[in-house]
Length: 244
Image (cartoon, rainbow, N blue to C red; front, side, top):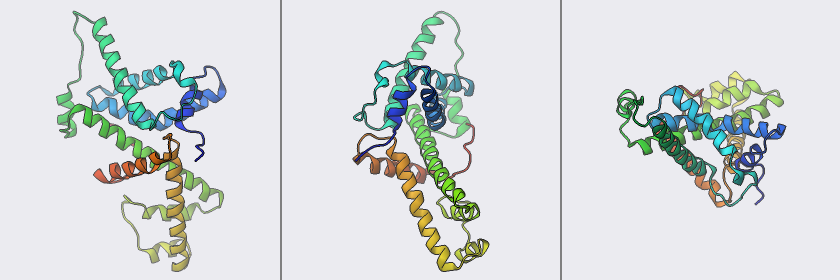
């Protein structure tokens, strides 16, 4: 199977300093992974401001690595790579901060306080992974949905898209099919057929999004299964991400 531009190759391209394409690649990586990485850091007990700074520092750390200048198709799942690299980066940054402030007072945000305020009881590491995975899953789903929306917009069917998306899992209130068909002036059989095409188009778009995050064909379905499992754990909300 041929893999198109993947997040591995985006990272490699973003490592080439000064190039317009590199800046574009970096922008895309930040757009996709800023929120998952930030939420992972927050779940480990850092303040919002610290999480923002550490997320930015982590991206700069990645771009400094010479090893990422050439895509490696055998690296595995990009999600797993980022988590492992981020854990090492946070450990290094903590050790560096402790060394700089040795003998002085260091401000820490209590992990116990985070757990109490957010009602969480998982160990810090598990909580961080859960926060990352959920943000990653939602970002991936939204990217797929945006792709489908652009296709409908190009076809002049934005109103139809707005109705069809109400039937995706996690919608606040799913309308009846006959009512939805009437809203877009379609017969019920025609709307049912369009709804089937919409779901297939969304599944294809989601598969394409996931395909860009892996390095081997067998990993695609594994990641899709993991994505759905993550979303099913706490329900699905495709709306804008909320601050935490």
